[in-house]
Image (cartoon, rainbow, N blue to C red; front, top):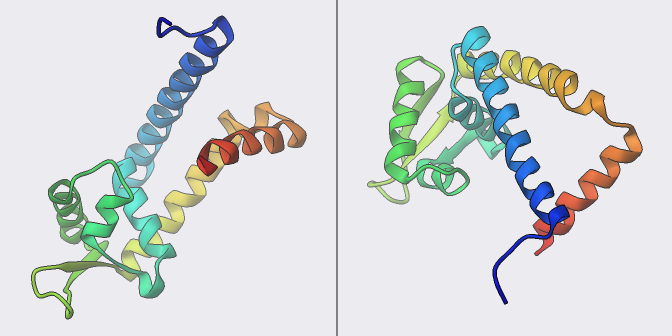
Length: 146
């Protein structure tokens, strides 16, 4: 059997990729323009805000992203230089390090998160009814359960 998409399958997959690209481009533009953050930097600030004591090992931040450990380390360095995060040596493993959200980083995260939510509501969520959003969420949940 040849590896092919059905018409509906090809459209669903292709359109998902297009929607993702458009959303990420619009979010990146807004974050850069309004908050001087890349989407990756915003994601790190957000993940740190969710973590106990607002701290995570840098290697764990990398596991939760598309970046390698060295790529995440460079991103954290940019956040440290901006005063949004600081590093702590991991007491359990002197070679490891934690990224810790600073007060300034949390303030920037809150502002960026508010803008992020407003943009997502405006250009995506507002296009659908609550019933459609619930159905869409069930599709994503089914995928994530696999």
